[in-house]
Length: 173
Image 1 (spheres, rainbow, N blue to C red):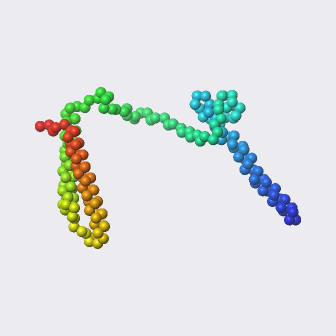
Image 2 (image 1 turned 120 degrees about the horizontal axis):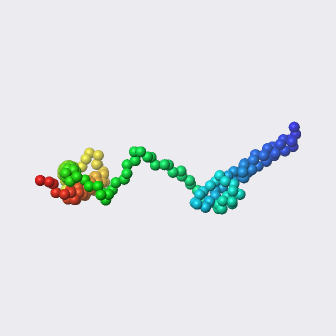
Image 3 (image 1 turned 180 degrees about the vertical axis):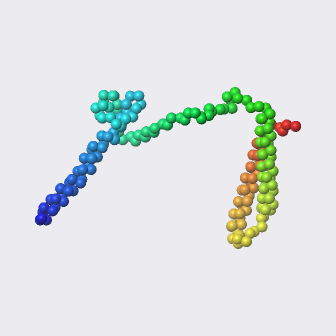
């Protein structure tokens, strides 16, 4: 086999390899065309003639996402309820709930006030004791500013708890 015959064979193989994907992509281009049909239907499984017969428009260049909806479960579905649905809670049960809520909020308020007192004691009016790893003064200042910020957050939390307690009806006596 001469060099010329090899190069011709190689050229033919290259042409076959290059031409095959082009022909394949031309065939698949028609199957990836999306049509929008009357009634807001999107179809990609129909031919161009069938789309024309149905009055569908060809959609080009726009990405289309189709999501299949699932059927809702039946049997153990719970109907949604709202506060305005007319269902009333027994007054005794409501008082018990309010009492429990008040007790929980008051316990949380006491806990948060105790934590605030501890934080303020450690803060020492802006002059907390230096710790062993704070040889750099900037580390000390950073810790002081973090303490100041956490005390402010704690005070804000306590104020919010007090507002929530104020919203509850007075305790039954």
